[in-house]
Image (cartoon, rainbow, N blue to C red):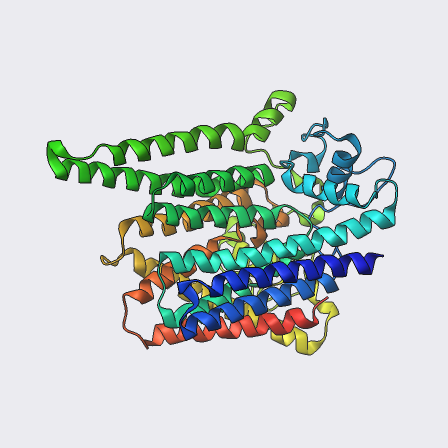
Length: 480
């Protein structure tokens, strides 16, 4: 039964992906040869992701996943779903005492629906089957996420000959494999954030109520999946202000006979966005604050897990360069905080390998993992360089610079702050900011748009993206 259901969900996901690709092929975007290659790469990446999800167990990534209990469910992600399915209402347990209950409920409601459909409330095996199906759906979210990351970069501006490289990066980005296979709310939240940013760019180019509605829905749903979705809203609001100021300037240029409709229309759209987002998006946080006194920026203190704590390390160890063992794919070691306390080392390790213990795999796999790790580091440094160069180029539109800068730096600086406020390893996991490479990729693309084709930097970025995608495809083909 389990295999049959998994195959049904997998085949359904493949059919939806084929439908999406058919729609994309019918648009102008995919008429050229580089664009068709990009589409092929994205579809191939989606197939790799779905195959990986079908092959690995639902509990391959234990990020507060919890265990299945029938009589008294625990309060982690699976237990949260069981409570929702059993009680048919939002949990009445304090998030200050029950860790998993601090999360907004949307992702867990989806999990509860799977449990209910399988009539699995009193059967461990049926709940396991439900989780396997949910894992396939979550990986489908990761496939859609890759398409939207590529679409966001394309919408901002990218050279046509760079389309396959951008598709290779977004289609085979290792972190999307990890968050898709993990049964928590990170993947769905990241998807809604990227969708919201994509429709923000579309709105700036065509300021219709329909595009504003899409932005609002995406960010409200993102907040109802995980409250950290609000970190990119300042970037979106700044784009709204840029559009409003541009409309005001055009009105002044037109003189007394200028049209006031554009300024009024944009102002109304922004006001409605703020009202809906602040009321619906923050509804869960407001509920938890009123009922249980949970602060808006609350996060569980994992100090009880001594093996995860890194407070014994100095700030220099954490913020300066990592020790060589940490970036040579040292096994995920809970007993040596000095080898795992550096923020940058953990960021790249978890981006590529999550929290897996790589000592259990073959020497050849480990060698490929080392190569992929260092490839990601060099690609990240080159991407950061290209993005920063873009900021100082006068030929790039100001609103694009603002969007890329805020989408990258606001979540990134918040991440650094959280790493020091909550000094344990779980807070240094890349999955918490899995969408920021999209901003760097967009920045590099904008920078390359203003440079001559065939430059060394362009060739380096393209080759690095292709190598990264190839290594990711090979490793995830044998991993699990």
